Length: 273
Image 1 (cartoon, one colour):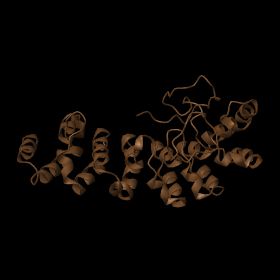
Image 2 (image 1 turned 90 degrees about the vertical axis):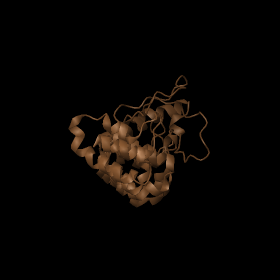
Image 3 (image 1 turned 180 degrees about the vertical axis):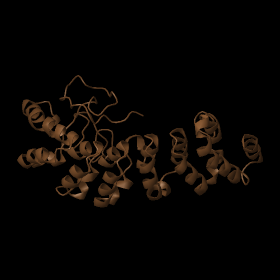
Image 4 (image 1 turned 120 degrees about the vertical axis):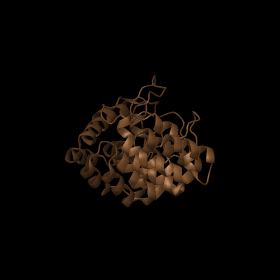
C-alpha cells in the first residue's frame, strides 16, 4: 500500500488524467462516477471550466499550502472569504482542507477547523473513499484521531479505501501507538479475515505488543496462514536475531495457544524454542 502524499502541491484538474498513480493528487478527475455510498465533498473547483480553474488556483492551492504548513490564520482568511471551501475538494484526490490538515499532523489547525464544521462534515470522503480519520491514521497522529472521533464517533463505522478499517490501516502503516489506541474500539467490528490481516501486519511491521495482545484475545490466530501459506511463526522465524527478545513472548504464547489446537504446531514450536 502506498501512503498518501501530504506534502506536494496539488495539480489542477486535467482531462488527460484518467488513471490513478497512487498519490493524493495524481488521481482521476472529478467527473468520473463515484459510488453512491460515498459522502462526496463539493467538486465545484474541479470542474473543467475557466471559472472553476480560476477558483482552484486562486483559492484551493493557497488553502492547501496553508493546511500542509499548519498556517491556521492564513487558511482561516481564505475560508472566511469563501465558506464553501470548508466542505470542498481542494485537491484532485477530492481531499478537503480537513483531510489535508489531518494528514499533515497539525493538531492545532485541526482543532480550530473543527469549530467551523458540523460533525457530518467529518464523514466526507476523498476519491479513494477515505475520511479525514484515515489520513490521521496513515500519518500516525493519535491526538488528531482522538479529536476527530470525539467530534463524530461514527467515523469508526465508515470503512475507507479497499474496504479496510482504520485499525488495519494503522497496522499496515506500522503505527504502533495508533493501532493500540484503535484496537479496543474496532477489533470486534472487523471480520475474521481482516483480523488475520491485522495480525500479520503487526508482525511484519514489528508491532509485537499488539500482536501478542491479539494472540491472547484470539488464540486461533496461532495457526492462521497468510496468502503465502505462512503462519505467524514462519514470519517470526525470518526476523533478525535483534528481535529475539521481543518475539520470544509471542512464541511462548503461541505454544500455550496451540495446546488446544494442533499437536503438530505445538511440536514445531517446541523445536523452535
